[in-house]
Length: 313
Image 1 (spheres, rainbow, N blue to C red):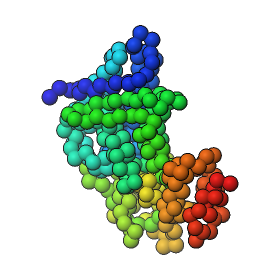
Image 2: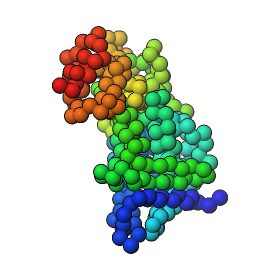
Image 3: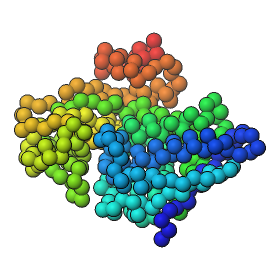
Image 4: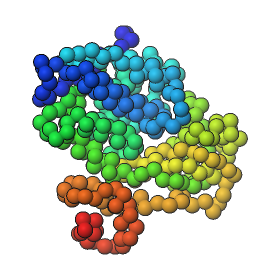
């Protein structure tokens, strides 16, 4: 097997001098693709897309070692993940619907993530807010141009079309995904199989993927494995308002008075999906911050039309 796979990226209906993509545009597109690929790779392997632990591990750096060239079509050579992930031969979390890493690259995971987010956005129960925000970075290549689009070919038959219309679907998902929230939760802490830094917290509400923050070392967590504990940290959510992972910043022995969430309005957001409704119905001037502020002042029993009128006021 070759150590690198070829991915082609074609820009359609863009106007460039001499019909060639300027070098600075090539660089920006490759950088954006690398950001999405890193987010998708981390989400696939670790269960969360952001990196808050300092320098990237070697397997991330190797997987994102892209080589680019092109004129009217950008060609990117990306290493196969089977060559770069070492012991990560199979996914810990099959969040993107990719059953095997065979013949797969980080760009291939990015393509799978984009395809999943745009084909059936109403059924999405994966992704976190960070990865969706990173995907929206492609918006900067379009501006007010609604006719241009970008084709990206993956390995085998993978192919996606990035356009303002598809990015709007991702925007709706991003808006309906609750922001990260502080959490205090009690449960039994277990180690994930095949991993030295991924954990699982189990309680009556289910199983939650967890990872340690940069402030709380693995050595500090070791004495608590297999025991009932209370941890504080940050909860990351998926578009359905469910916890996708927990970033643990501190662990103590079990506190029976610990509440599931320290402060949360995510259940109301999940029930009403206000951000998605606002975008779909073309309401203007309503930011996520305004929604989060107003939603605390609204009676949950109000009818939907009353809620929309309040938000558009």
